Image (tube, rainbow, N blue to C red; front, side, top):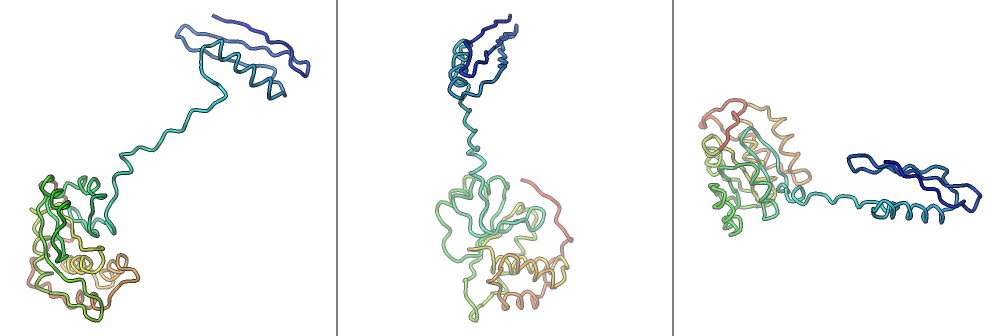
Length: 236
């Protein structure tokens, strides 16, 4: 069905003709001809057309959709990265990171901090069936850095057991203590020292420590079980 309407002549003498077409499906298409140069007349006539069609204000724009809230809730911990299939590293996760950590499907977490694990984190582990391995290493600053080799070795034994994968290794900021564990793992994977140091420095940045790199260089991997160059991807 077609409905023709003509409006009075505009201030500049031009006649405005509007054709409203309604299709069988119920959709309405509006074509406007002879556009007037007078803004006041243009808005008045558009309002009149809109009222005839039973719609809202055509001159107003629909608000832009707001970003999805769910997408904003997946925040990774500081210095988060994948080390290998089933192995991740990061700084200390807090409650803002729980939604993201949950997506990893972890079986285990290795914490390298000596302080008692926060109650909120402990509840999160229980709710998700994640086992905590805590190896307390003090966060000393140079030149008083003391890296306990036996503790690093124990942590590596947990990392090497694929039954603990997927697994997250973390300390406070994911730089020094985590960097040493990952660096020693790289020696087991037969990485060259320059590549091991490059990876360590990417996370430690300006806080890189010569003592940490010396520890990784001198670390003896002969007593540990040698592993393939890469772990197979394991899931819970």
